[in-house]
Structures are given as structure tokens and as C-alpha cells.
Image 1 (tube, helix red, strand yellow):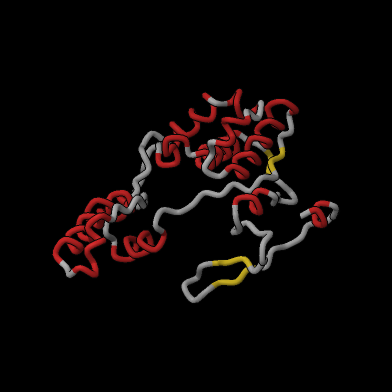
Image 2 (cartoon, one colour):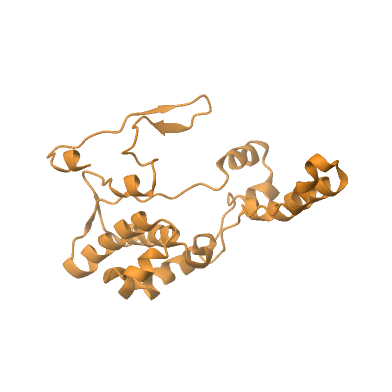
Length: 201
């Protein structure tokens, strides 16, 4: 990272696609698919002007990185408001606040970007903003077979910015845990431990 930071030209991260069409980076460490720390070190070379739309998605991303009280599953409006409510802590790089983030380094990079904009009027954003799909495999299947019920559960149908994000994995927790626990209760002693399993995700 130190070597690349001294370059005056961009560097590129090689990728390839697997048989499903999923794209993976070929870097051993420094890539946007690496861990929290390595990903937080990467900035885009050209950057993007901080328009109202860009700021909106930047705020959503920041809320997702911190994820206080599972805010990443809240509505877009709630996530943007969460950032606005915590703007002083973000701009002042509140140490205790940052340490509570799910992704500490990514959230720190977000805080530095927001700080540069609000304090120093830097209106070009170089921070990559990652917004994930929701159960992308199930999204593809639901779309292919036009299953509106499943499509709703994986956020394929139209929503407003005030709608909460649907989370199919959370919906499945109770029935999956119940099935595993019942298997532990009704099976031989080798599987008895299954009756106490409580998956969280």
C-alpha cells in the first residue's frame, strides 16, 4: 500500500469470473474483496464529484459500515438520518464511536471522507462505495421464474426509501433452527447436540 501510494498513475486490480459469472479479484491481499483493513486502504484514482445523489449513497454506505443496532437493514431514509444524527461524531472522528462499528477501518475511511467534505470542502470522493445485493442467487431465481412472493423477500419489487430492507436469511432462522433442534431431539445420541443449536445468521 505504501509503494502504490507514491505512484502518480493508477494501478489496476486483476479479476476473473467463475462459471456462475461471479467476479473475483486476483490480488493476494490488497483488493476490494479483502478484509476490512486492506479494503479501506483502496481509493479510486479519478473519484466522483460529491453531488446530492452521491452524498446520499455515501451516507447509506457509512451507516452500513457502522451497523449500529442493525441499521443496515433499516430503510434508506433511516440510514441517511442516522448519519445526519451522528454527523458531529463522524466529523470529529469520535474514537469510541468508531470502535463500535462492525467494519472499523471501512467506517474510519468513510468518516475521513465526510470530514474532508464538511470541514475542508473537498467535493471529489475517491472512496469506493459498496452496496451489496440481497441473496443475489435467490434474486436471480425469483426473477427467472417470476416468483413475486420470493422477489419481495429479496427486495426485487419496487420499494420507497421509507421501506425497511427485507432479509430472507432472518425470515428463515426460526424454521431452520426448529428443524435442526427437532432432529437433535428425535435422532440417536450422536446428533443429540443439535437440539441446542441456535443459528444467528
